[in-house]
Length: 180
Length: 301
Image (tube, rainbow over all chains, first blue to last red; front, side, top):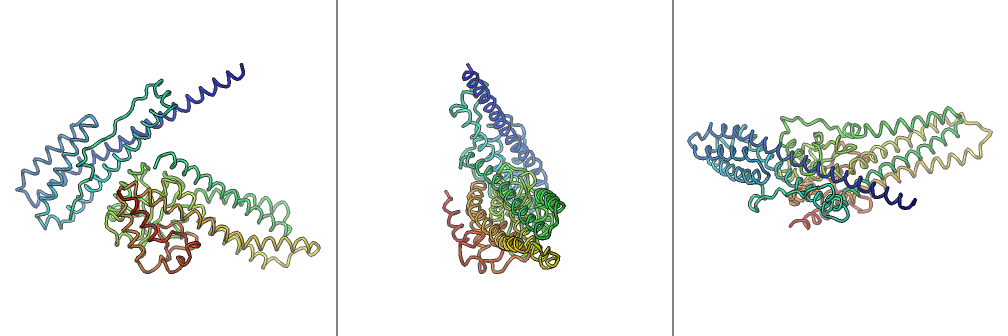
């Protein structure tokens, strides 16, 4: 009798412990996603400044400004993680073109304001990439816990779903390196 | 690198720190006991030393990072002036999933950096102006990633405490000898025999303790450098940045003025330059730079 009670207590303790650790892992994951979000927002905020600065030196490059505005609007409107990833991939590509255009204007390249913006944008690109990397690491830890025996039993009982990786097409893996 | 090994490592670092604090407290307690016995201070002396050890541990635990920064002459880095440095620290801490540490700068031409703090929540990263002048963005990122790895693994907790205790033990030893010198005459002449033995033990202890601390410092530092290099490469996914930075640091001739023997092991590379300590690997606070670079580049995919 005593042994049965002890075993039951142990099982309950195990369930409690595993459940809590799964909750912690899932919260970490949410937090990691929030980090990506913060950085994406910061990037959207920086872009108008950049466009204004470039306009000051190269007002006639209208086409590229329109493309940037369009890509930015699309990225801001995206909802699901997959859409967000794709839209931001597009935005990165357009920004790359914008910096390539800026190459042709020495006065622009030399301006303090532009250099600062360039640093801020490449830092933000890095932050997005790192936040994504950290998010994927957390997803992996969480998913492993959901799939590994015996914690998978607890995950099943309390309905912990596997999470998707923030995957991006191979081409975008490398954050655009701005050459100066 | 699975997350389990990292959690093990953090637990090990915390355990080692508390063990270290405990052992040193015991040693101080023993030293206090000897002093009280030799000078016949009685119960008041024991109470004094007990309180001293408690307060010193509290002060040590909560202020060690501040002390290290003060000793190293580090100033908070201005967000506007050092915006790139702030950006890099922020992006690497995102990669490591820790809050952004406080950023400090030392006015020194020697390229070097260190991190300190009890936990990732109150950590500080400090770089020299020489490092900022010499490194490009990727290299600086590699160096910062190395420091962030130390913070993330709680190496900074252990290394900071060891640095402070190392400094204190030397101070304590000097105090011990000086007090013998000044108050030696007041001794109670009746108990000469046992007193002589106590004094002898005290002297042996005073000589051995600093050596012990030195050896611990050497042992904890070197293996952790390799590990922090590897974690840095993992965080940035760009091992070459750190490798190039180390190459540049290794080629620099000179030494860091504000580093002391007690803080040497905190830095990313030996602050005294290679001439002084790299004669024998056994007595070096850091592994040879070329060996580190080789290991880092092996991580490249």
